[in-house]
Length: 366
Image (cartoon, rainbow, N blue to C red; front, side):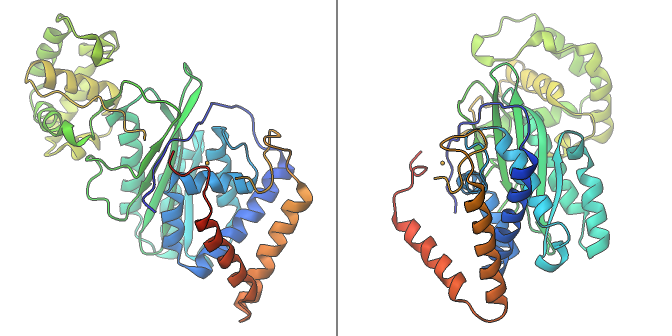
C-alpha cells in the first residue's frame, strides 16, 4: 500500500449536482461498511492515504476523474455517507472545505467527548499537517481543504488540498499517522500534482541543518534577527532560490520573532507549532540560515488513475444513473447478507478484487 504517484488535477470550479452527490454518498457508505466489515477501520485509513486508491474511489463514485473537485466532493460524500454510523463502524471524519476546515479542531473535540476518544493528539495532528503543507512546504499552493479521518484508538489519516490560482492547478497532500516518526522530517505518504516546481521544502531530510539553525535563530532576541534579515535583503541572491524578498518586511516580523523568543522553541516542530508562525516567518528564517550561517534549505519539490459509472463532466461518458443505483443495491445486499452469515456475495466481490490485481491497471507505473 506504499504506492505513490502523480495525478493531474486541473483547478475546476462548481459543484456536483444534487442527484449525483446523493448517489455518491450512498455508494461511499456501502464501500466504507464493506471495508470495515471485511477488514478494520484502520484499513480504511490506509487506503484513503494512498493517492491512487483515493483517485480510483473518486472514479467509482462518478466524479470528474481529473478535477480538483474530486478531492473535496469525495471527502464530502464519505462524511455524509457515514453520518449516523460513526459509532457503529468506528470511523470518524472532521473538517472539509473553506470555513468548514477551520472548524476541524472543534469537530474533533465534540466527537471525542461523545465517543470517549482522546482529542488532543488528533487536534495536534490536524493542525501540524496543515502547518507543514502551508508553511514548511512552500510550493505555491494555498490550502483550502482539510479533512482528517480517525478511529477510536486514535489512528488517523489526513487528506488536504491546496490551489494555485496562477497555474490553475491543485495539489493534494496525503498523510497517515501510522509509522509517522516526525511531522517535520519527510512526513508525507504522498504528494500528488500534475507538475513540479521550485519549492522551499523545510521538511526534506537535507534541510536538517536549516531547521536547526532556524530554530536557534528563533530563540535569539528579535532585534538581532531583524538586523540580519535587513543585511540579507541588500545581498544579490541567485535566481534558483525562488523567494520573493519583497514579500518579507522585517519590521512586521518583529512581533513574530518576539513571540518565538518568548517561547524559546527547542526544535523545528515546536517552532512551527507556535501560533502566528507562518510562511513569511519560515522564509525569513531559511534566508538567514542560508546566507548568514551557510545552512541552505532544500528546494526539492516533494511531489512524486478505470471508470465504473462515467464522470460528472461526461468523460469518458455521462454517468449511467441506472447502473449506479444497481451498484449501490448490490453492495447493500452483499453487506446485509454477510451480516446474516451468508458471505457468498461478499466473497464474489473479493474474488473480483483478486482478479483485478492480476490485470494491468492504467495508473500503475505512473
